Image (tube, rainbow, N blue to C red; front, side):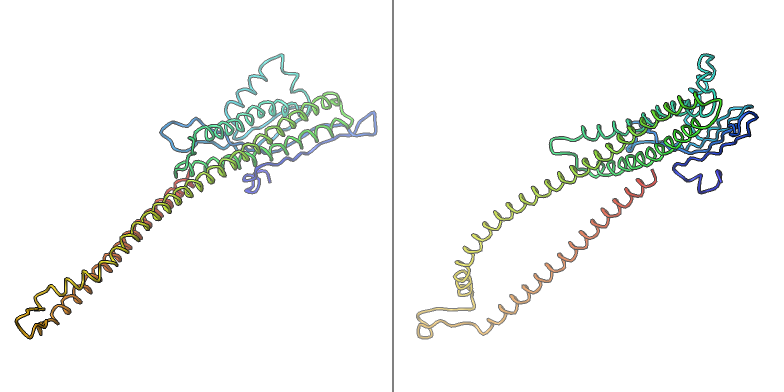
Length: 346
């Protein structure tokens, strides 16, 4: 089952099998072998070049199989950081440190000592990302689209960090509990197991601290997102207020112009109409009365046609303007979709 799809895609588990043999001197069985299999994952932040927009990272989906007996003591490690393997080999090659791995769960203790460094670097690298985001804002914050996408990307790191650290904490707790159970049994390694269980409990408390830091990073990310959103809302509100004030001033000016126009428009129309050649006022003719031409209808026909033509041109211009605005909004929407598509591939 260790190699099936369910276990390979799991984010953390622990299993053990204890072998015992009957004792020749006592009725209680004696420990003869211990097998364990467990899995832990961690997300590490890589050094990101300046020309790369988003943070680079690497997943380590670590799996382990251990076997302890009188004949051998073995620990198989899969997909671990290369530095972790070299550090363990350096410790094992030192004659003074060979007693550290004597007995059951000795290699587990050595492994967890190295994994503490890996998880510590993981959560603090993400904490530094949070700090850089907090320091990158100006007096009114950073509200451009690229910064929003970066916050989304960084929030994924915080969520994954909590998931990985939480499951790893449970695995370390299970290892410490199983070591304590073995220490309570009749075994020639009882004293070593008891001391080792205390060290494994210490590693468990260390993992709890890393988990608390990961949760703190996620809360800081939430605060950063809320702050950026609130700043954006305030900027929008300020812009709307400025637009409203400008609109109010324009409205007051247009109102004044409209009133003046209404006052002079009737008189202007009458003077323009009577000033045309269609009307004739000669005191010496027609008994001093004003006369008008029978072709006066031409004026009204031409005026109505030109007015309708002007309204038609205005309507066509409005339709073209609306199509242009719709095309611009579509381009912006496509740009946003492409940006999110690129973000999901990272």
